[in-house]
Image (cartoon, protein in one colour):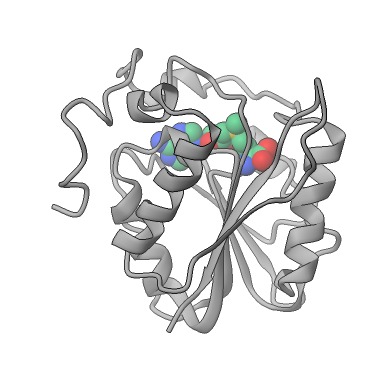
Length: 206
Ligand SMILES: C[S@@+](CC[C@H](N)C(=O)[O-])C[C@H]1O[C@@H](n2cnc3c(N)ncnc32)[C@H](O)[C@@H]1O
C-alpha cells in the first residue's frame, strides 16, 4: 500500500467521520491571508501554470490563479456549491479523495495539478499524488502549497504534530514516495509577524 512506512497513527484524525458531513455547508472564505494568496498566485505564474490545462485538487470557489488557464480548469473538491461558484472552472468534480483516491481522468491529461492548503487532510496522500503523476503530461508540474492554518479536527495527526520545517519534510516525502524527482520547496512569503507563511513544493513529471 502506497501509504506504508509512516509512523503508526500518522494518518489518524480527531474527527475520522465522513468528510462529506464536515464539508456539507459551503464556506465562501479564503483560508489564508492576502499576502499568502498573492504568493500562491505568483508561484503559479512563475511556473507557467496558467499556460496549460489545469486540475485544482481539493478546490473551492477560488483557485488563486491570475487568469483562466488557456487549456481550461477542472476543479475537484467536496462542496458542490463552492466549486460551482469558482469563476474560472470549466469542469467540476465532487469527490471524496479519502474514500477513493483515484482521479477520474485519463492518463496525461493535464499540464499542471494543484493543491492549495489542503494536503494535510488526506489520509492517502501518496496514492493521490501517484494519481496526479498519472494524469500529468510529461513535463507537467504538480504544485502543493501550504501554510500553518487548518481545520485541526480534520488534519492528519502527523501534520498536527510537526512544526513548519517538519511539514515541509512531510510534503517532500509525499511527493518523492509518489515518484516525483527533483522536488523544490521554498517559503514563498517572508517571515512576517502575525501573517500567514506560504510554503510551496513542486516538481515536474518525467
Ligand atoms: C482549507 S480548504 C482549501 C480550499 C481551496 N483549495 C483554497 O485554496 O481555498 C480545504 C478544501 O479541501 C477539500 N477537501 C477536504 N477533504 C477532502 C477530501 N476528502 N476529498 C476531496 N477534497 C477534500 C474541501 O472541499 C475544501 O474545499
